[in-house]
Amino acid sequence: RLQIENLIDPAAIATSRLTEGKDAIAGLTQTPKTLPPRYFYDDRGSQLFEQICELPEYYLTRTETAILQKYATEIARLTGACELVELGSGSSTKTRILLDAYHKLGYPLHYIPVDVSAGILESSARQLLADYTTLKVRALASTYELALERLAPTLLPSRTICFIGSTLGNLTPSESDEFFARIFAALEIGEYFLLGVDLQKPKSVLEAAYNDCQGVTAAFNLNMLQHLNWRYDSNFDLQNFEHWAFYNETEHQIEMHLRSLRSQTVQMRSLNLTVEFADRETIRTEISRKFNLTNLQQQLQTRGLIPIQTWTDTKNWFGLLLCQK
Ligand code: AVI
Image 1: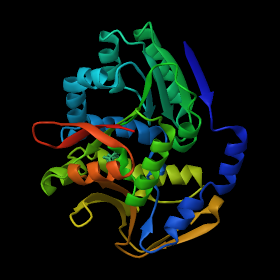
Image 2: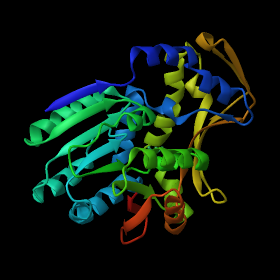
Image 3: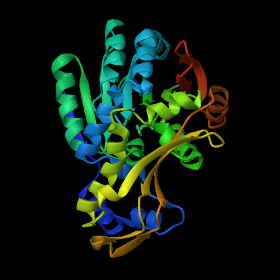
Image 4: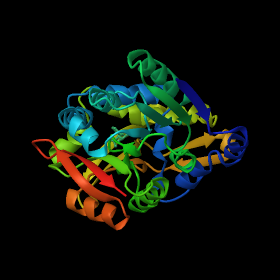
């Protein structure tokens, strides 16, 4: 019942080695400096992210889970029997709520988790198969782009592509437009897109979520430098940087930065790059956009993904949208 495909094939890996690090070079040689959030997720970073999801201040995971628990049956009734594709499936924890709902309605369970981390993909798929005896899994170790291009025709009456956890917020507006176009292209008319997003709310709540008391988010942010040290044979001294996160009210986004605590020079040997930092200069490591539901619904509609139902929690902190092509 388990099929695992690695779409990050040898040819693609060979090409990615050649281009590997280009994004880091581009980000660190521009002003202001940036680094792509993908560098958060080495093994330690992925563990720290799981810890973030449990933090009292980080309401996102808890709130989305509660919405899913309340409305999963309604979602399953609306879509009917369908194949579930999940982009960025990670540990697949929240997906279980959906699988339970489809199972209770007597629908067959076909699940296609997509994740760049083959390790977590395989272990969570095996665990799911042990727990759901009728489940069929086709796990794709892949980027979202490749996976969306390679979805085979579904054997069930419909398909739902799930993109939950507010990962959309980590894409810039132009990247999300491009992403929606890819979703549209991957769906047949009448098929579904389930999207979970974090919503605009008071600055104090948002800033607390990215500046937790235990310092887990700070460790997650700083770990990016550790990751770059081993990946690119670099010598970032973590003592010389600090975590800085704030809500940019004009752009409606949390920005995470790493701030240099002195003027310093860093060598990134395998990239052949020397990076100079002024005292207090920052590297922006992530944006996390906070959405207005009406604007987002309009944007999806424009992209041909028609929102047919939207659910939120009692505080209107998080939104779950079911769209249909
Ligand atoms: C993965 N993503 C939705 C998280 C977020 O909230 O934007 C990443 C994160 N960054 C800091 N804390 C969590």
